[in-house]
Length: 254
Image (cartoon, rainbow, N blue to C red):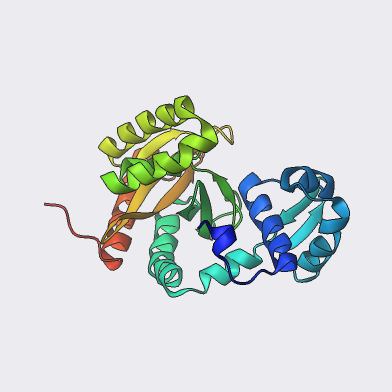
């Protein structure tokens, strides 16, 4: 039997609420009740109470363009031991990295076909660039997404392709795979941000016992006069991920 016919119990109201949360997560942008209605195949009146309750419980919030997810689910997930231990191991190293490079940095993990920022450290000084906690982006578009395929083992690569191809198409995934394999061979990413002009994404992988588990990113901004050059910043970043990877049980490469 499939999942729908094999279930012993149903909770229609709960399922409507979960549908809303999953839809907003998958789209990664605000949606109006009417847009949700079309996507979910439910009437606006069916969703109205769910939206009101989710807003009251602070799982979603209104914006001028519709409703979006808050960081409440993110915070609940971060309370789990594996994510918590990763952040605990990374934060002291990230503070040192930001001090050495005079740049901000942020910690990213994969979640299905997206990446999500789970920790950040602001760069010292009055000027800098950073992203909010809980920020998400499609893994095929993100600089850090290249590391999550390029540094993955064969099993994880196959799982990612199976997940991504139905959503983004074979051609787009093939381009992503080619770029990710090149980045994996290099061991890091260094490329101009396609999201913010004037920023160069420096990305290095954090490895665990079973492969890549996260990435550490420095969105590098050239200061005048220069304080820490981009080559030096990349060296500091790679040293930082080696330290965190060691704490997370990565096996040292010969």
